[in-house]
Length: 282
Image: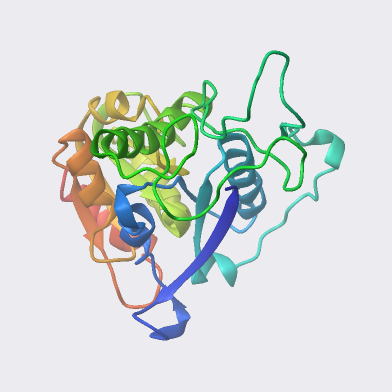
């Protein structure tokens, strides 16, 4: 089912620090769904980026038929910057396809017959001939019948994972925000660390240091070229306003000896702090 969940992170747990910022929910978004059933995760990096990130999250949700989590945080939510209000004609259209009836030669509706994205057909409730079962019980592939078959369950778990992984084929490749294509340090950020990283890296680049900056929007799945990009630098530094969450995923997925800079005080990381952290790796 297409669904967009927006998480504006703050200091936790529970009510925690309700007016302070944090990036402490990434692992929950990444791994928190039961039954090894992943969801796409997208992160906005600035106040103006929130619109584009939300629009992209909706596109993924409706075209890939999946819930999507959009992460922001208190620093972004309470921030402001000039933003040109977009015209609807300038927005990339989001193509939505509904199944409106049985196709020629189709004897009965197969609600789990997937397309090239592994997305199931979207049948409008009440459409004649498209009645099907819904609910939390495991379904048989293709037919959508309730199934307790062991092999079918393993197949469906793998299919749900592959469906999310395949979204990488429909999102842009990771780009550098600034810096050389290869060098000494790549500072890899997500969310509201964008401004501090951008300023710190610019200062070091002005000194002639081979330092680059990349800000990740697509956290699950990662852009398909991210592994190759990480391998072009001697060191990877991941600043986060948490106890080290993206760094765990990066190390797990890519076997990269990334280093973290973590601050969990309810306030943003500063440019000066990052300059010192980067220089320690040079």
